Image 1: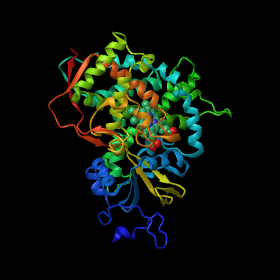
Image 2 (image 1 turned 90 degrees about the vertical axis):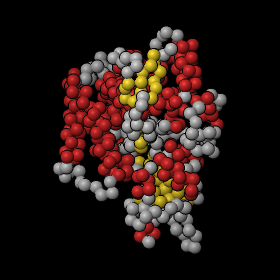
Image 3 (image 1 turned 90 degrees about the horizontal axis):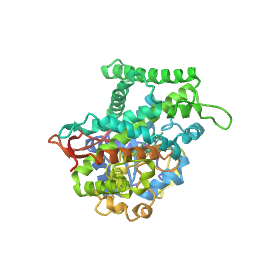
Amino acid sequence: MIVEQVQTQLDVTAGRNRLPPGPRGLPLVGMAFYLRRNPLEGMRQLARDYGDIVRFQVMGQERILLNHPDWINQVLVLQHNKFHKSELTRRITARMLGQGLLISEGEFWRRQRRLAQPAFHRARINDYAATMLEITCSHIRSWRYAEVRNIGQEMTALTLGIAVRTLFGATLPEEARGVGQAMTFLMRYSLRRQRLPFRIPETWPTPANRRANRELEFIDSLVYRIISERQAEGNSNHHNDLLALLMGAMDADGTQMTRQQLHDETMTLFVAGHETTAQMLTWTWYALSQNPAVEARLQEELDGRLGVHPIEPSDLPKLPYLQAVMNEVLRLYPPAYIMAREVISPCEIAGYTLRPKSTVLFSQWVMQRDPRYYDDPEAFRPERWLDGLADRLPPGAYFPFGGGPRRCIGEGFALQEAAIVIATLARRFRFRLAPSDPVVPEPLVTLRPRHGIQMTLHRRS
Ligand code: HEM
């Protein structure tokens, strides 16, 4: 069998088969078609059929799927230095994000993270609250009761607006409006390429390749121009945005980021920072529309604690139910639904020795719906978070923001942004599904609803 002939990267010791269990798949393609048909449920089925560690092949390459919190914690935290971001992640993002935080490694990554970290301290994030609120209010100014809107598109436009303003401040050129569309195209394009069994080289002048080049050049030149304008002004301190903080950041040895690094980090924050939060918000409105009792309890908490006042960062600790709703949305609809790592030095996981170049996968979608850790796991029940569940869960059972040293740098930013948007909109509207296509999660770079979600905007009674 061809599949069996593929050289395994796992240890096979004399007389004792050390391979984790897993399906054989089809000759040549392995499990590629099976997982392509329905990646989310396909992974869950593999976990159900084979257990906490599963080995399979995709197009001749070995994949190890981990379905136990302990093994995930080993990779993210306890043995993190034996792993790198996967080749797959790099291929999907490298062209757009260069050597940005999301994919850089080693000493380079450590320095960049050190330089960027102060921009995400709590006090800094609080400073963005007013901008987040202002953009949310101005975004919904044109909304009318009883009209139908594609809530996915609305949330993407809203979080893009917030990302643009918090990254670049108010002084953004007119053409920045096209950035969102360009980003969406590039994400779809990269992912589609990775999923094709046979890839056409990026240099071939196909319509998709040509458009991808145009969109990349457009975003690149815009970002470089903004950086140049700032440098020409001497990055004066009247700018209070993320770019100013990154430009001003200085390492202990007095060095600062180069133009290229500033570009890569800016692009990374742009991409990582708006798409994920947009999906979290989109799924929030869907989940609330399907669970009116949860929606009513949330609105009651917001009314009781905030009255008619706009939400402020200091209100957040007083809104435990809002926090629970956000936790539950991130559990059932994790925008980052899978993570991947490549083994760089031999390590022991679940009693197996993993050799360099193996790709390890673990999925928030699978783990966060695992009945071993969540009662009635398919149900949207924010209440489950109110009695200390977060403290009882083993590390690795709930990881919407990843974990260990590479945990999401923007977690606090995202949660504050989501809380402000939810609190502001939930006090004005009830969103209800309009007759349209069924809502089906689609695992692209992030977890999106396949056809968007058409919703009718009702006035809150
Ligand atoms: C709901 C929203 C978000 C979710 C679910 C999310 C999820 C994640 C996850 C799972 C990772 C870890 C990836 C890995 O280890 O392979 C990550 C990393 C990262 N995220 Fe987020 N993220 C969100 C919002 C944000 C925001 C708002 C920003 C920036 C403003 C951001 C910037 C980043 C960056 C730069 C990294 C790489 C960090 C590093 O490796 O040092 N994210 N995110």
